[in-house]
Image (cartoon, rainbow, N blue to C red; front, side, top):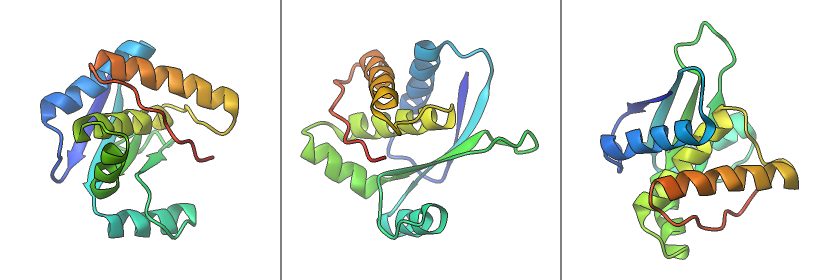
Length: 147
């Protein structure tokens, strides 16, 4: 099961966050527990993190950090930029809750080892995200993949 540990404030309720975690678990049928940190930040913070950890000096919608060290308290961290999520929600004509749910699910999938480095991986990730969004009663929007 996925356990999301929120740091700071969230634009999503604890019930919504739990539903995302349960939908990922139901889609993948996970055999073990995962502890994942989750933060919602501003554009400046995500740009600083993106520059420091990925070498990209620009803001992004989400960053995922997977920890393979068993001594870590967490399996990974997800950082979501609320402002960019709001812009993407408007651009795709969906609710902010749907966009944030998609981004959190996307981040969880990255921490669980799923990626989109090639077309086959992207198609697989698309299918999983579509299943998760359907379980959450949201329509799945086209995801613009960056590799």
